[in-house]
Length: 369
Image (cartoon, rainbow, N blue to C red; front, side, top):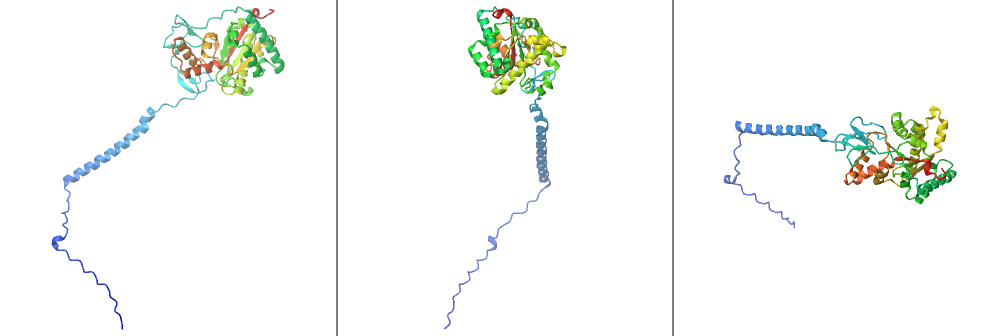
């Protein structure tokens, strides 16, 4: 018997909607001329704002920002005299406007000009060059110091096989430690002068030194003229002590620069007071060379600003007329009892330690003379 399979019944069709239930569509909106005018105005304003915004950005980036942006600093070398041109001076590799003019000797001290180091404003507030140092009294302490200094030079030259400036740093330090008032005693001898040097000069390389633009005739004449001005005291001296220094960077490099500066000072002194090699002054130069006692201290026993102010404001040669500005600023503040910032002190003491000081020891300060 055949079994019939039940099939599901089809769902009943949904009831048809009556015409009353059909959706009613709103009538189409028709624009009128007034609406089109308003829409055009809106689009016109939008486009105008876009154009104005673009123009504003153009003006900001092309016109305004270049004006507001600080000008690029002109690069320079402080070891080249007048490298920045009129009205500017080189400071740490960039040209800076000269803040005020330099006072001449005899000018009243004011904010309108700077009294350049080593000149200073006295109690009368007049810019004056350093006065001539009074002659030494040649105490027994000073005579003993000279005797020990000469003995140290003799021993050191025997070991080094050359001038005292070639003496090993540790041997120089042993002598300095035994004379804790080394700098003060040197200043007691009176007649002295100072050579200041830019960073990295004189060059440590002989070949570079000969072609070095820093060591041109104009710059070198600054040192020679100062030495010639002290010629009588230098010639009369029984001994000439040359002390070379450098700022703290690398111990070995500092010592090398101190040696280079001592050599430069020695040759400048010989040229100034004994004549140049080209002039055939060999005998005079040999006799004068025998007077030299040389110390290359490197970066040890750094000079302080207060010590310089009290003891080393003596005739000074700079490689450029504006080179002393940082030192002048710091000294002026000291004189006016104004606090010197760490930055100003650092700049000033960097300058005074890139130096060579020359001291003349007269015959009467030497035992047995």
